[in-house]
Image 1 (cartoon, helix red, strand yellow):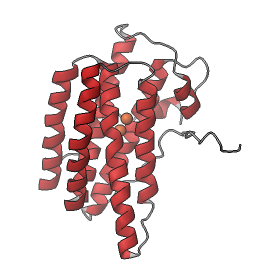
Image 2 (tube, protein in one colour):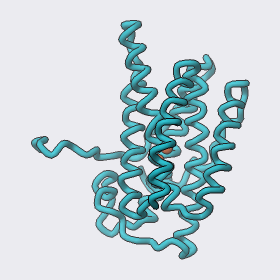
Image 3 (cartoon, protein in one colour):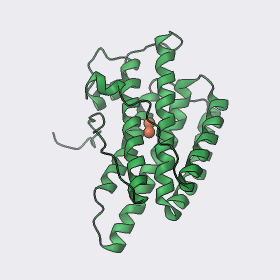
Length: 230
Ligand SMILES: [Fe+2]
Ligand SMILES: [Fe+2]
């Protein structure tokens, strides 16, 4: 993925078309309000806490799609791998930002409380309406793109220090040794834009509508268990 790709596609918005879309949009906007109130301009803290939430839907979707494929003895059309990759990618966002910003004790408590609530909520939603669940994620990702755009502005205007990129991030995205936090935020934002398009695509497919082609997101080198032989 080149520099132009990292900068394009950041303004995409899926206009709500159905009741399901409007419910998803309203839910995400109310959560956005809560996040804006709680974090204000503390973008590092915001990234760490919200990435612990962002990594949940992919694993829930993968689990339930896997179980459905087993029950129906049918092909998953690549959904399970895609959703697991998304969950892993979001977890790597967390592992990256935890190197840049340490959450407060209160934020760690919030993470634990919210994980239970959000996991159970999202599991239930996915059982009842996978289409709405994917639309919720599509809208979450639209908001993530906006938040990381704000984070970039904070860095560019000198309010957040443009520290060197953590090693885990350089290894995962194949960034050069000279890479900085700004480069990391750019590539993370491109990941979020990719999740946005994939999840809106899943929701469109489940709604029976036309599905737009989705370009591949940034390339990743996932962590391997330490006993893996190269
Ligand atoms: Fe993320
Ligand atoms: Fe995301």
